[in-house]
Length: 231
Image 1 (tube, helix red, strand yellow):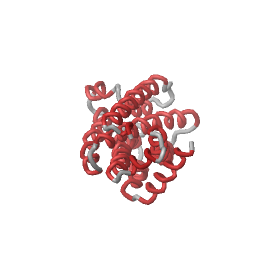
Image 2 (cartoon, rainbow, N blue to C red; image 1 turned 45 degrees about the vertical axis):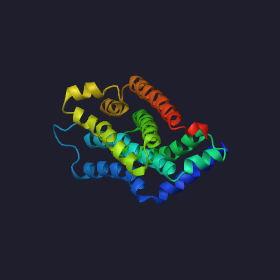
Image 3 (tube, helix red, strand yellow; image 1 turned 90 degrees about the vertical axis):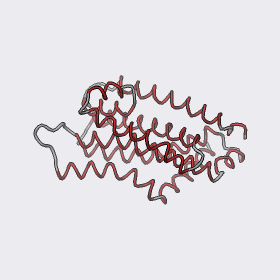
Image 4 (cartoon, rainbow, N blue to C red; image 1 turned 135 degrees about the horizontal axis):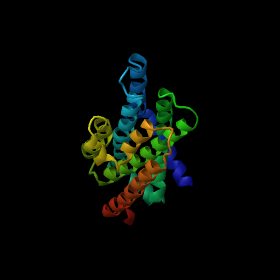
């Protein structure tokens, strides 16, 4: 627990000082709120359309690049290897990094929920699916960061994946085929919940949890492939 707290504290301080990463947690909720205020609800427009669009982009696009950049930077600067040599276990490192990112994701998700005017059980259902999506993206970004040679390569590798997962659900609103293809992915499940926020989130939550399990396994495999576990 001490190692987790140390990594969490270190990464939280870095995130607060890094404007490029910090803006990822502020930009997307801000866009949703501004669009809601400027345009509001118009006849023929889907309810909470801007929140739905920006929430999936945030969970898919923003957090993948943030997580990949953090891990790749630590690898490039040899910080990860030094931490492991100092006795920080790989799982403690991942939990500490993920906790710092998830803290920011909580505030962003709360902002999305307020922008959509969710309340009561609807608010908590929305918050739950957003945080599951944020955790999945964090794990996916971490895997890319482990595999990338440096921070620049991590950005190049993570961006195409982030664009597909982030903007795909937006496109699915206009194309049913895209929606069916993306249905097994966690970002699409955010859209599913927002469209029917008063209904049970059991299936979307289970699909998102399945994504998390698969991504955790991929991270472990990537970690071992890079030989970091032998340090």
